[in-house]
Length: 193
Image (cartoon, rainbow, N blue to C red; front, top):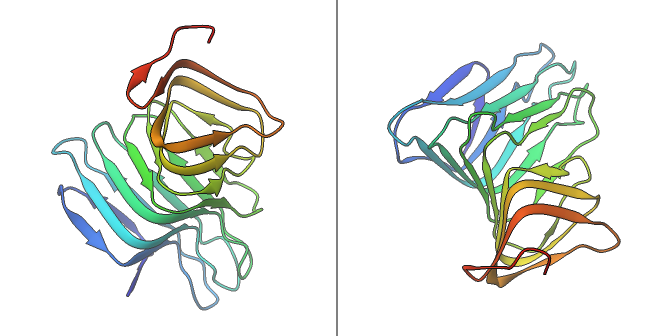
């Protein structure tokens, strides 16, 4: 079952779960925004076994969606879609300004909708499968590739740590990437290597 959020919901438990999640109204003509927030204490966590879609697909548009992470919060998702071109188009906003962890077992996609916003802040993104990062996601605080091949679609800046586990690969393609520290299979690398 898909959980459609048309209001503001705050995760305040360490073990919340759902099958799939749409932030913003996903049907009919009228718009309704949806926001997912995380409590500021108690290590709030949400696991979504399917897709997380940030922005609804109602016929008139404007059913924008927002996810706001806090320090110590975690969202585990099978896939994440930012923005929704369905219907009249609705934007998606993900803010990790205060930290938190976004762990994705599949792909992260960005649909071409005005108003989409990605704020890496002090957060950590963990990628667990082969994927191509959308060009709109070209900055991260901490990026961890735990398995699969992650391919860049644009030059990418990692302001703190880039970690690549033994089962993970980062394919730069023709693009560059910078990071403050680099770790391969839990072993820090010497600067300049």
